[in-house]
Image (cartoon, rainbow, N blue to C red; front, side, top):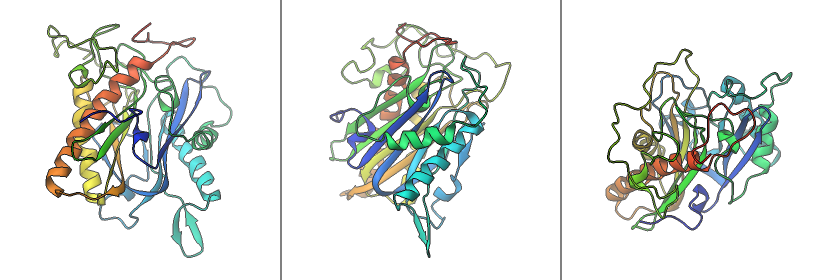
Length: 327
């Protein structure tokens, strides 16, 4: 296996990503969309999630395909970003057809970035407009680090951010991930220290620092926070394989392995850790069980790498409350 040409989730044909951010507020929105509707699933393993339309993604629910996925800052305010995306998609004629009605299906997840040094004294919720802007910015190339949903993100000891990574598997199928890292846990023991995801690194994509054989995983950030619900890492993994909703849901579930490898601790009571999964259906499975196994494994590796790339790519901004990895 090897990274795709861009080493981004948009190495999967048809997928596009748009970011929008406001650095004065220290927040932003990331939208994953496609040329056509796609199958999606979700797995929530954190104790403090904030979501929209995730129930619809269950395998037994009626709607089989969706139009976009949204990752947003802003805690509950950020869920309004999906409304902006839905409005914009409706103008394009996208959505679930119900008689004469046309309803874009836009599941979303949010992270908490309300105490990160930004000016949160808005008079009108800014997230709907940020969602619209992010969708309009959709493209195959996009920036990592302090952009989109990762703009105001933080980790235990460092500034967080937006990351992405891809892999072309030996069976010819592509898997990839995009993630906004805003974790209670740490991804590294500190500035310039190797990432916990370093064993999965390709071509020095997050510094080539190697692994720290001396670190004690029991000694990393485990201090109980004085305030709760201020975290959450939200991600999307994707593949160009032809998956059912049940297979896509399983893909979301197994991809949490990558989060656990890259963030210590993860899935805590104060994180709303969530992974969406998307399948564009471009490639048939030649060996169904074997292919599904390797796709899940590859997606979890992509997610671990994307988490490290998010923090590695973060850049300093005025009034930051955490240093960047490279600062």
